[in-house]
Length: 238
Image 1 (cartoon, rainbow, N blue to C red):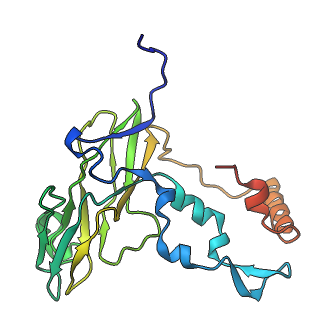
Image 2: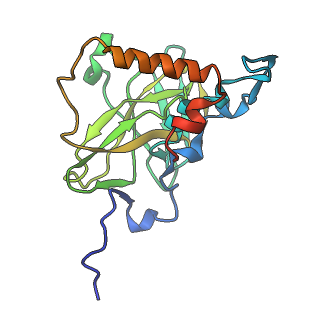
């Protein structure tokens, strides 16, 4: 019997049956922490405020949290790119089975004022439909803090509760004189379900109260007496 009370997911991904178990699936962004961040040692060689080794950026919990948030969609198939010395010419060889790249015209981004000019904007073809619950949209961003040297996808916001169709990802190409293959599984974008009508277009902007100033001072003093105060005592568990 159909369970009429089954909770609908806030976000789901589905693709054509012929591509299921063929193309890389969307995964939690935590599976794609950028390599530069992974390479950082946890501690510095110098001493920190509390006598032990000083913390590196790897101990910055807000950095790790934001890079772990959302879902990352990746390139669906190996794709070969060749560019000339100013990227005005970009040649692409799609895989035999699946087209992963097309192009927009440079005029669509403003021609001479376009980001990456004179490179024509790349369009990554995404095989995944993103479906959100009623009232939820999808925020699409380049993978946070990844700094891909070859391309950057443009951000977007789509009402994916109503638009039940694949969303492709326009991108600006960066690398001249490139001749190589971008591998399947390379992160393209990270997506986040966003509840609509919760964004305040007119936030209150004011000076702080005396109590708020005192709270800032209290937190500052605690941070200077207890190591990792934010990560161990203030941060909500994920």
